[in-house]
Length: 169
Image (cartoon, rainbow, N blue to C red; front, side, top):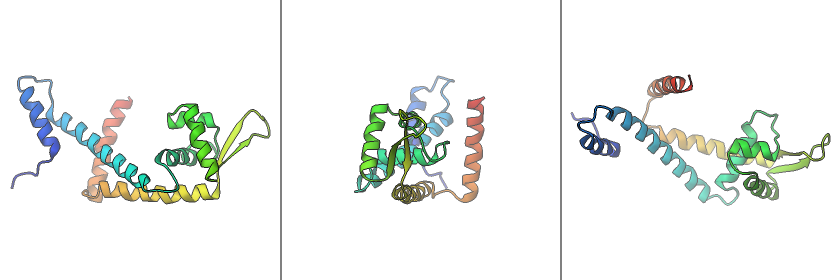
């Protein structure tokens, strides 16, 4: 029985034909990298679609809440710390925080020890919204990788870890 082919196989075949006399072209590397990219793209699309339907939170606002909830400080941060962790400008973070404060998902307070410093903290409603969306996201992620068994996911993680450790060394 022939192995099933996907759209990346076609992509790799086109490049292999183009580079047929080029030993530097590695079809397995091209296929793996393009597949990982496609999987990430599909997960981002599913997340964007889920938030497009949301009336309470944008994807960007969720990402801000997420950074606040998982960052290394004790569930509080300054706007500058959140901007850096979110990889957005401080102005963009101010916009996001304005929406989250208006929605009563975070509080913005001056630090008692230093009135120039502003501290952002999640509210109970912010924690509940984050909880709701984090678990919905986990379900989408699991669905995206649902073709793999638990053992295959363990193997995939081991292989990706090996690549990442080499890149990080």
